[in-house]
Length: 98
Image (cartoon, rainbow, N blue to C red):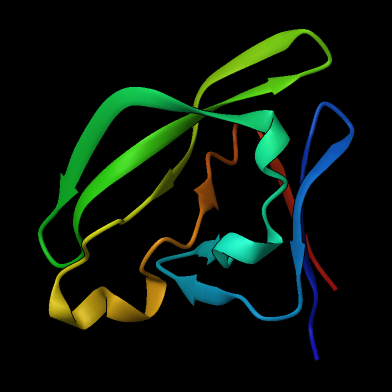
């Protein structure tokens, strides 16, 4: 089974072999995310078919990565399979699949 890893500034912030792949993004289940690196952001955006997303900032090695991750707390019906799953901004977080 494939494994996905998210690293920010060399630190693993999420890792799983049970992810969803949607629109080119790996969505990590909530249980695979290392919460000690995350705090809530005030940013919210809307997708026409997934719903409203909420964002997290990441705090890694004394650095703050603003709005580096997002999730859908109340997705629309077609996106219920990614409810609360976390995806990452690829400009700030390295995603690998193996």
